[in-house]
Length: 329
Length: 236
Image 1 (cartoon, one colour):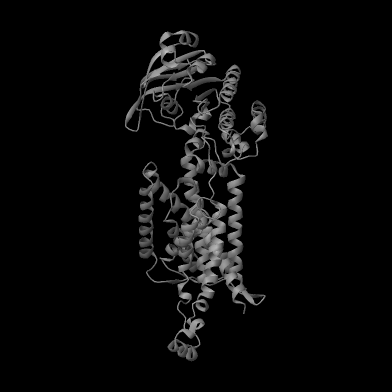
Image 2: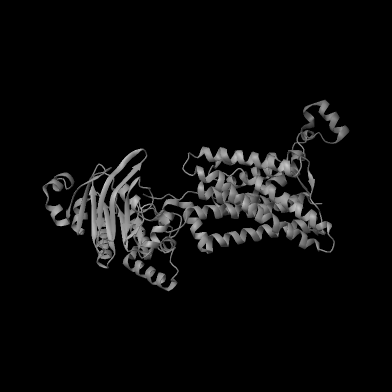
């Protein structure tokens, strides 16, 4: 089996989910310069709501699995949209004029509240996400790709394409771009700023809901904490691409997924001390006996996103695509 | 009744009372200049008229309707457009997109297209650069874009905040030519300027503002001739 190609496929799957979640961060940041740390929790709640719906419908016979999964998405999206709208309305709007640190801390607070509410409503235990979709596996040049992976990548590409069209081809998108650049002047153009900001949260939350369902489908398990880690990684992806930049969030998400998957695939081999077994006789003996003395295994998967974050912040804080156009005054 | 009528307008800004109960009126079709030194409260007045700041007391009527505490996005539909201090062009949008933003509230597509053509004709420099992002324009070009964008909303009252600021003398002349033209086409203009002599030469009437209060008002010609104005604002 070709590890490289296999991890590339896994990475693209992961990465496309990161990209869709990262869009939620970057859109909100672009429009009000707030890092909405509660976004990961919205994604998690999307997964949980879909789990409920799918669990309830899968029991009743007769419905084809595709319909059941679509019903899961159709229930998660409006719930998350309402949640996103409420969060902005209740927690961020009252702080619109406040120093930037205040809403940021509020966002962390909202995130903690949502996580604990989810713990109370759903369960403290990991819940199995019904794997009802048929999941045949296809062979591609020595690696495999499953139907669920194909569905995830295709859905994410579709969402990204749709959002790009919305932002660059519609009146609402034009209002969003203008508001993101200069809310005061956008208001002078007759754009109702508050409504545009609300809409941005609603769209981001809707995308997050779909990502939450896809995440459940992929891993087959949901836990009330999964949104926090997924959210943080997607945030890293948004920073990697250049926070506030939509194309950057998509590129950053996919790159981060690939880096994570390849890193996880190769970290064991790369940190195998037997490459330098000649350094010590004790080590050489263990190598002869076990074959490998691996320093870091694939359980270090979560490290890569944050390594990437550190590297970006040190060497290119504005991200890959986050160049600033100077406005001459 | 005047097109714009301001009574007892008081605006606080960052804890200080920047505008202290001023009265002013602008008649339909007039070009009125509001002049005064830096920090006199001219920009604050315009911002309050455009709904960007909330007055603490007083009233503003436009065309007979009270608009005192209307948020800015409701004012352009009523016919009031502001060209803000420092232009406020959307730097990452193209020139054409900036102009389209000016017509955001309009749904008469054919007329918008015609207005776009007219604005690009009025400002040939913008026509040349219509596909460029606005952040790459010079200061004068950005000012033209900001004025053109305001015109795209077909305002009845155009508020201009320091249109000459930071521009080369040639460009200032050009901008004032345009302002006269807009006025001649029937748009009512309220112009805030530090360059008092240019503003009064273009205007019908003027108000002089000092530390948040209006201290003098007369026809532009009389103000230009007044010893007080000449000494304080024309450097004589």
